[in-house]
Image (cartoon, rainbow, N blue to C red):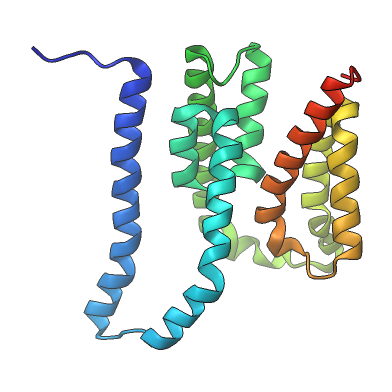
Length: 221
């Protein structure tokens, strides 16, 4: 007799299948291109490149798994790691949906809400990209107009500024430590730039958790 899986067990089963499937598709594409066009990489250069860059991505992968999964839930994590752009898009959407419904990501209700929020975010993003691809040619003269250049330069700061105010206002005592740490690092460590954001977000999360625990133990929170 076939045993009925619980919701969370079915999430792990389907998530594992889909993640492995996507991984194989991602690997299959460069292999297919190499076979079709008879091209192959310089294996020596490829290995040297992997030696210098792969450890960083392994570390980021471990850190993101530890920090993001408790906030996204199982279903949301499987979906987010496939669709990408977690810290900039998927995580804020999931957290906002959980807070609006006053549930935890570890609960079954939170699992469902987080997954729906991330799925909706992925669908909306895909639709916007499709519209952008279709409209990019006729809109290019307008978008490249000098008068709009200052506005486009401030889009990301405006977006994250709005998100930051929303989160900081809920508990400013927790927000002070990571904000001060990131300001110090990005001001006094020239090597840090926009390309290192993917690493610094998990680092900031772990730092914030540590500081929050200390403040909680001291009765500040």
